[in-house]
Image 1: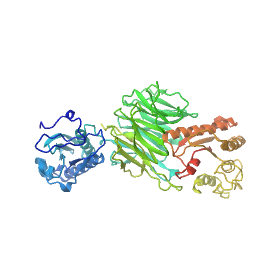
Image 2: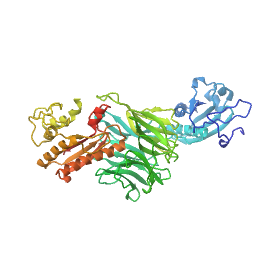
Image 3: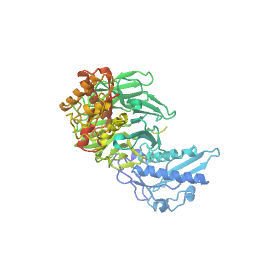
Image 4: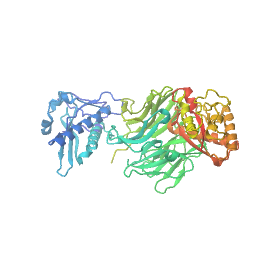
Length: 444
Length: 164
């Protein structure tokens, strides 16, 4: 197995580099720091099972793993009709020539077994086909009902082993489900797995709700609700289903976000025509004002270390991005391009800030470094807004809205994802229209 | 553009069900108030009622793109509102601030709050007791005109005085 090279030795490999068999072959590897060029062909046969239930779970797992990896744009699952080696035979030993023959560069081998106490044990292995080498694998047991999460964990392990980056498949997205005519829109808080499965509504649409964001534990959501006609920030607990106001404030509170340690919520309060940024310490219930400026200061987002806050302000005349210390000190403007910059969100990796930009009648989703350099626009449209980062900082979700005619026809509001390199834009299907997505951290 | 007036007059019609249905267009404009929500067909509307305010005073003013100053053409409406509100001091009021769809959600919430506050300050300056006035911003969430064009956006950038 010494032919597996260390990742560190493979600095310049682009997508996948395979040297002809017989010589030393480079390991299967995708470099996702550059534009993705050619997805990696991967074979994902059904996970084997010895009972009907196990076999069904095994089929379902293979399907979900395949869909996760395909959606990333970095992998190309091979049509199972092309497979030569059977699932049963694969359990004995991978027959690598059979997989080379269909140009699979990676192979997933898995099985599902009952543990006798009502649980299932799922085992998987990832193989480098051309090197005939084991790459990674694990065994986990769980309730059969948790097969989707197990599938996403398999996909995460494959993604991580092949790209060197953490995966983002065992995650959820909270968003606003929209329905009804444009002038009487019903908006509901809704949550789903990142692939759109397991969808459920958290509020019934009786009141307007906006801008949900996860806590670092993924078990709480802070959002804006017009409950009883008063726009205020709330925290929704996913375990208890309870909703609690962040506090009693004299003005409208909105634009909330958790701090990375989960102990604070930063938000805006508008009062007497002035919008300022505040933090609420959830442990002490003390509120602190962070900005003191007659401008609109809003859309705050913490750096991953919690030491800084990026926000938008029109204090210079138009909407621009600023960074200040988490205590409100030393606000410095970072965006200087043409147009207006809004909704900054700090990447979980810390290296980039995603934003919405308006210029020339169009909206854009873009990223820049925290010092304001390296601006890149990834998506454009009549309206694209509200980027949110996948926890690995490699994929963004946002929403896209189409224009409507004077009767409101033509409007559609959809969630999208896009790779950080600006390729692989995908619709994230939802039962109703959707906006304001927020991506969870990896589920613990 | 019939639809956009329906909600206003549906409410008025419910409250004044015994009276003749008000006009559902703003085309007559006999009072000289420059808002689309007014109606010249005021026959049968009880003076001092909510429908009187909407039909004969005008419940809304409009703003320029990304602005929150009260426009010159809005001042006449707000002066009439203030006079009416002083004549009927039993109403408390909520001023709604709205924005068009050409801004980001959170910024537009803040902008709507600025607009509602501008209307409030004008009315208070014209003698309406501040204790009667509340504000609420809906940002870009509650358009009245549905199109994605300047004609619609100019109607959606508004401050609406709602009597409680």
